[in-house]
Length: 124
Image 1: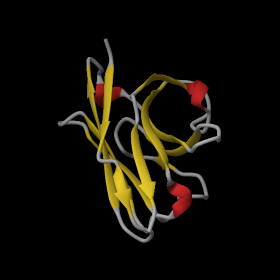
Image 2 (image 1 turned 60 degrees about the vertical axis):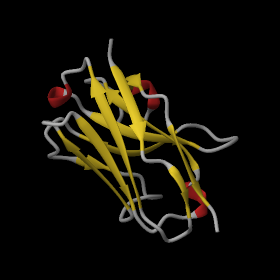
Image 3 (image 1 turned 180 degrees about the vertical axis):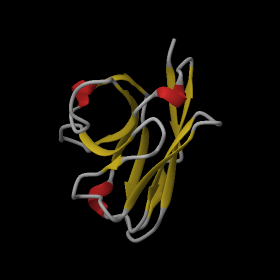
Image 4 (image 1 turned 135 degrees about the vertical axis):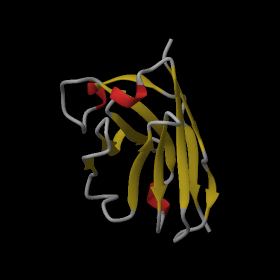
């Protein structure tokens, strides 16, 4: 059974940096397109970043472009999200997910497997 386990969340101040990790198991990770989403209290789940199986292409919404960087280490079967210059509005539970072959990167319905999430709180 595919398992995705996020880690690295926590409490940070505005302007700080944070790196999230997502460890995959029972998944052919090196062939999998992957993404990060987040859900803030009272809001819909939101696409944060996506990366193709070989790291050759990445995707971001305008809200995080230039501040967040998605990367992967296929040898370690781990996905990362580097978050720089964090803002209060980045506060959310962050999820990694495996993308199916079809569908929009931005839509949660395009993703087949999800982790349990890690909380990121940005507060002074």
